[in-house]
Length: 88
Image (cartoon, rainbow, N blue to C red; front, side):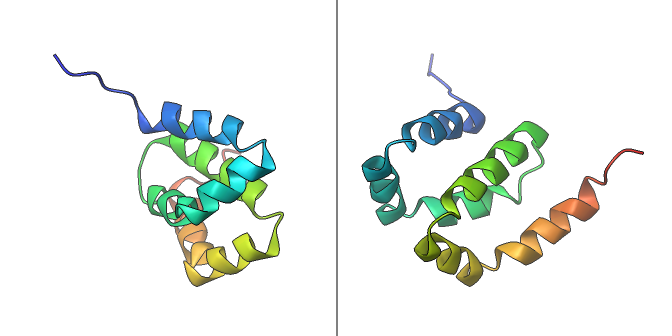
């Protein structure tokens, strides 16, 4: 029987580890931003909230912002906003 850990749990762990700037820098060098951006296509609401929070945290540094722009993140976030509209 295999062990399964959800993407949400894995990204939550990475988010907590990224509190250390050196670890965050290593994550960026290992292409964490494209991984996070690709997760914006998923339909898991909890994962989407976590990924957006992680991307927000990473956006503090200009290098990360530039990479997010190159990944066309704004269009993906806009598409997600249309799928999950705010409740009124």
